[in-house]
Length: 284
Ligand code: SF4
Ligand code: SF4
Image 1 (tube, rainbow, N blue to C red):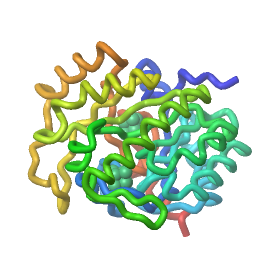
Image 2 (image 1 turned 135 degrees about the vertical axis):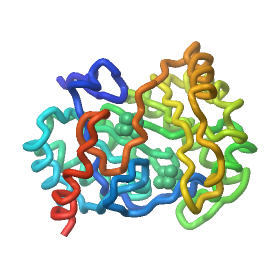
Image 3 (image 1 turned 60 degrees about the vertical axis):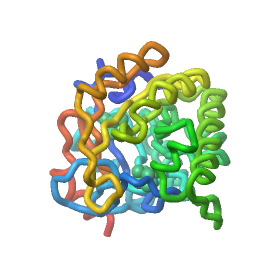
């Protein structure tokens, strides 16, 4: 039986002794968030969507072997992009399968926008994934329409409120389905000033009613060449009261480091830059 408390993002007390690795096996995305600009990069840039390379599942398994010899404190193997795990379901599931065989003692974690996850809920459970994060930053399609440029369902692309509505439906069903399967669910909510900061307590209430375990309010990191490039990053004066209010209905994560898609190590001591060469060697 795995000790599911040993996930440094879901349990702050373990953040000093348990580390995580993000395996960048999922390059494509099935939605476009207006704050996201993914690029592959080996410089010291730390934000979601950035990675120094993309791995195939077998390469990710080899990379994992090497990472574990260099950093034995790793307790969690996760997939968080650089796109979305379920816009790349074959790669995601194959990676989890290989890890389950080679390193069954690890906790497995997936971070998704929720759009494509529903057909794979049983696989997720069977493969021993214990923690899933769904990013939900709006539960009102009018607000969602300002956050997402488009949402893709198979070959159909939805825009505006229609796109936000399709996405929301999937996200809420995902929380319900994951909880029915006993999986621990975190909700990431990106705080975008002027767009959704007055709406996020409502998000907290809705996801909490569906059984989500914890919410992570992540301040927007304004990124070049995005719609929100000139928005000021929200500080503690916005995030603090939001967490306090939302914390009345759902536990709040307060130690998120807004990690890269190839982050590795303890949360406060990321080694992705020093292991960049290992990752690049495995990706060849
Ligand atoms: Fe970028 Fe993630 Fe949004 Fe996809 S879901 S556009 S990878 S932030
Ligand atoms: Fe954990 Fe936040 Fe990093 Fe995700 S981005 S691995 S929740 S610290």
